[in-house]
Image (cartoon, one colour):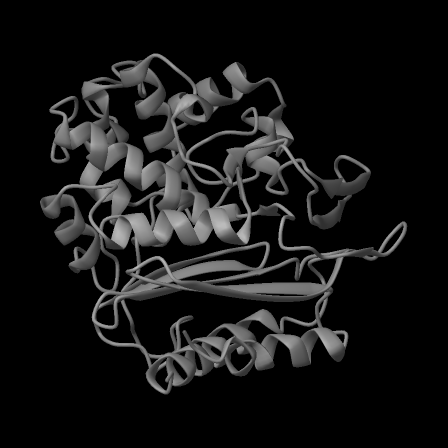
Length: 337
């Protein structure tokens, strides 16, 4: 298929230099032919644990694309929600004590998908409690501070609550396919951070504090995946097996700057690197994960790392690594025999 070792070389080098504990790279074509490479330790403390192909990674914000965006667009295809309707069509109790004036009541599904709202990027919800139902109520009733549109976890927390209301079930009940699961995953997990709030190394439980406080399966984070599970989702999406042609158009078309419905398009300095085609979409996760789909080349790749282990307060090599791997993947793909 391609020289996977050439594509993986930047990641292998960083692992060998000790700049992150482990990395796995998977590449797959439209015909399902795939190649995977991995190196390093799934955990370094309390004992070293070598990474295997079957280890589960905390996908962090890649959950937004694989899970929540797919759920929202599927429900729209089924006529169970209108993307241009306000969230209150599914969550009538959103800011229920100010139904006449609360601006949150006018936010639409489409605006949340494209991060086109006034909501903040992130907020320490977990510091207000850890009862999942109470924390959902906190999100729904809080008068959020206004700001310019930014990439916002709150957008997707609200979308997740809306999906729960429409389906009458937690997000974890949605069929995602083999190799994808909300935690704890059904297999060996890659360690993430020593969490000062939970006072332990996290392994097989969600890294994101707000996701944990919201019960582990909210709209913005919480999904775990193996490299093969992420690859198969991306292949199926690329092949039109997950979403309708209209929904595929929405995730490939700019809605707000470089944001599509749930995904990102290439822009200066973006994570997928400068070598991919302009038809590429992608998304990253805080734990050191990422997924990119190049529709022109009919190829997709995922880079999964545990760059936050044992702490996020370390070398931010991931920002250097992602575009380097993207460039190497394209070189290897274009030069394959």
